[in-house]
View 1 (cartoon, helix red, strand yellow):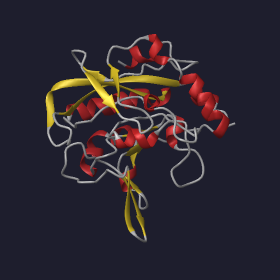
View 2 (cartoon, one colour):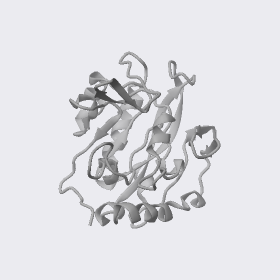
View 3 (cartoon, one colour):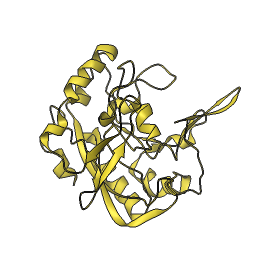
Length: 251
């Protein structure tokens, strides 16, 4: 499926903005700034409209996206099992869904293999919708990661800065993925206690769709990716990433 996803992507990103079950089911995404919108599995070239325009808006705030990233983004189609209920407690192992992740071409094959392993492990994922479908954030310094996280959406590339720290996020390189953010929140310890990102997230290791050391050992580490759940502070349970060398820099 990577081969299918790679054609006609570079040098400009062709973004297939859609995710859905087989049999043309749909998923719904929420954005605080918009009413609920339906993203259909039936995609067309017109679904890519707006990506380059929005990227230019972000670049006016963050500077140009490095050409070693811009020219090498690939849309990878992945299959996964999801949940039967909105509370994400029960897995539906009978129906595979299809989603899309925008990543750097150097990790595209690994991403495909990671999700093939998660599928084989019957690890459920709520949804996989390109983050561009959530629109820009309030100050146009990236796409709306907050809305995507609150919607428990799994996403990859996002040209944005790091949360609570200077510099670019590894998501801006297309070499990081956030998986089930609501089930795998970033946990930041403060003097007033733990702060969760997203705020509606809770980390319960026994819950389906939660990344644990055992899952990561089987499906993530064999491909050379690391897991933010092992970071000392903060613990970013949703975040997996791959260091590629040389690391692209913004020019």
